[in-house]
Length: 257
Image (cartoon, rainbow, N blue to C red; front, side, top):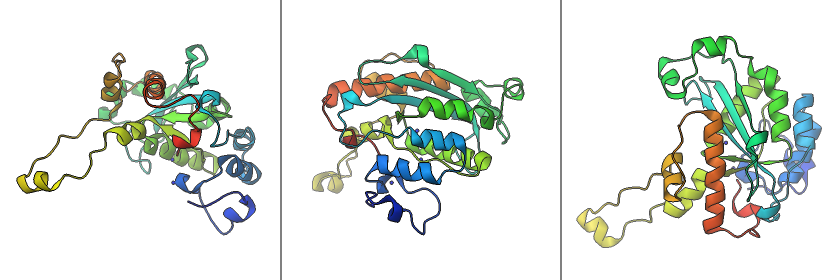
């Protein structure tokens, strides 16, 4: 949870370009998905894109969503890899925990002691786990037709892009609602005024980490760094953000990137 050209003419929008479009460059995600469905070679990606996505003017109350979290061997997508994935289907009023999915996968990168301490996935667990290539069809089927919800899009989108490119020979594109970015909009500090600069006054930044953001909405504290729990925590945070700051009729384009 991977950014301004107009893709209303998709045949021309991708001409002469290699690799994914920056997400902010996509003005029309349904048209982009149609273009990607025609271009994808792997049948699992073809199915994912063919399922389409809702348009940016869709009211939030009508948007099917899915929260996702990944745990990794580190923070660098070029060197580190995914070790677990959790997904939880949701919408603005309901979190479908019974339909959630969780996978532990075997990374090709080394599992460092520091990462084991964080996510508690051991060498023995990953030795018995499948490669991400073996579960990617199930993962893409779970995501298909839903808008992805993450807390920090640079992690989920980047790691999935690199992982799929290494295994399928092609990456992935999708829009996201980023609960961290929504918190940043609210708590981003304005530039200091003249007197503050003159006297060196500084305001401590507000934390937009998942647990701290949830606390501001009165949500309970969960164990961190478990992919399924963090996906659930992200889903609950988005529902709280929507209830406090948006209308059910707010268009999706106001949130996604």
